Image (cartoon, rainbow, N blue to C red; front, side, top):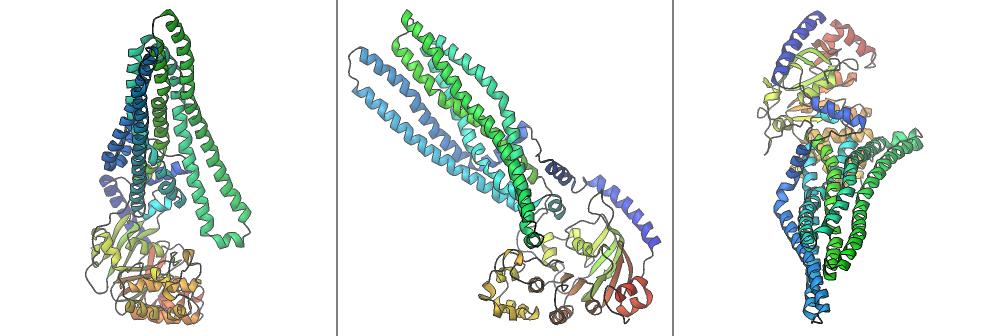
Length: 626
């Protein structure tokens, strides 16, 4: 089959206009939110949430634990009440001393109040701290589950290190704001109001002096709160940048060393750490200002009350015991005021973290159905059809596919060949639904892949990526990664087919041998064989091989070609290959160029009728005989 460029261009224009209009009418452009998030990430800032949105997000994290937090808050309130009774007991003690009465009962009462208040507050603190850790755990589980379901375009637009920072660093900041901050605001507010009422009952004049000083200094504190939030947000973004640059360096560790780039990469990481330090110090500075203002307000109030109260005692307006009780309440006021300031400060810090977490939660995810995935279309080899498919990765990027059309029956092997950038690997990404076609349809067994359950679709496919990634862990864990229920007999069989049985015998711990970070303890060819074995162990209906034998020596390549050819008798195999030895085994070959299908046929047919394939066969495939 041969498709002319003129026909493809006309069809591409019609399809793009039709599907583009329909998609815009149905839903917003996929990835628009990710684009905005990516742009903000480049600026090192997170999206600002309104106060209502922040509280709504806070409540979502707080809600499952509200009963436990209420219990901790109730106990903290009891501890506060016991503290409020102490100045009154002290007043009675002073009055009793003036009357030469017995003070034993009052001393016992004071001692009991102190001990009971301390014990109750300790229990309340433990309950709240434990709940705070539970809030962080739940937030991390939810966020991790969501991030691992992100659509591939969303991941590609966001730095992995920044996403990891939101799971680790940002969720940690939820600890205080979702428990201590809420409880501190509630208990501190009630204690403050109660204390003020009791101080007013003792002497309204001294209360007016105290409140005047607190309001004056409190107004200044309110001005620094937005600065705390801004500095914290910038600090968290900088921490995310540290994770990003470290992930980049460790991801290409051998390249860093081979390039002699250790010092340069160290400088990059140090610069990111310096930026995080700078914003962290700025946040600490404003938090210190807020905290110190509390002590300043109380101390100034104490001096004012001591001077004015002493004058009122001298004039006989109030008794000495009243002044003593008032001063005790004044010192006691430090705690609720500190709690209120701490609650507001923690809220400012937490709101920055919540904004970054909420931003990650708005990234577009895939819908994975619960339960056991069922193979698409039942059993047997799958058929694959592309109907006038157009695709581009983003609206601001050029099209990768321009009306791609082909049909692959099953079973058998179909090879995709063409120059670099022709769109061969993208074919696999569309079949796996890593990406959605911009126009046209991708069909498996005659049904659009968008109509299949995503878990079922991928359960029917074995996919070997171009770089054949191997995960840190044991060899066994990597082999059963896509088929966790595989038996030992099935594993042994696939080891033989992938020519890994000899490797397993040489390894010190066999299948339980650790393969290192990204399979660093294995050679490139061994990693490819592990990836192929992993795909075969899944027993797929459709096997996708993207340059799966590019790093193998001639002996192992020949053996694996035989294994793939054997698999092609039972399943449908699609392979992207540049080696002639692999391509000539295919039942059909699809020649792609500049996002279009030029021709489809066997090796002999294409050599005779397609100039591009003939050139590839003579040069890229390294063969002179055609």
